Image (cartoon, rainbow, N blue to C red; front, side):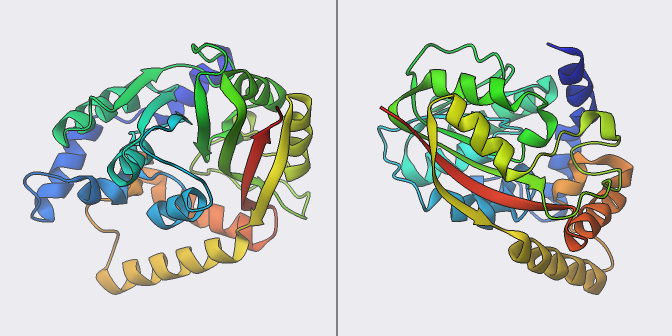
Length: 277
């Protein structure tokens, strides 16, 4: 891996994560977790499952669809796709502990035969040309400096007519510096948030054309307003949630993220690209 990728993997590495997930499940009365039980912690992006379904609902996915999930994390999106659509999913991530825990969770919910997770780089994919019908990516591009290499690799592994569907945090109207720490980085050196135009240009260079785009700022602010209100009512976060992935500064990271969205420094954006035949 490149130096940036080592720093990114270190940022997401959390000690005793599986044990803390198990402890949180027990606090909620869950002895044998299902795919749905894991949702609060394994959809590590703005809006969680609601955002996942909002993007997936725009795609044609069947049991025969070959899917690559870039930045798979704990495998939550992969498990959701297999559970809902019956497709086979390959997931890659830079963080070994995420992949290891993801494999364990896949086995626990009996989906390990349908999901293959491995440690790999998004800018050097270990797959052959035309291997996939669909590539998905949720909140990963913020840690990738070379968007052109990312899109070139996605274009290479997609079949002709395949699609690349992503949901990323991108630069909004304000050029003011971001406030750190943030969920994807504690420092500016590891954060590579770019405007939507950068994605479109990189896609075009890789033979991908923009099919659909949706700005998700209002959705984000509403989602976090509801989440913060719920935490205030209950006196803190629920036992199981994405805060387990962010360490002791989870609250600060989320508040800074929302502040950056409010000030138009960043905004989540959905994009769907088609590979030109």
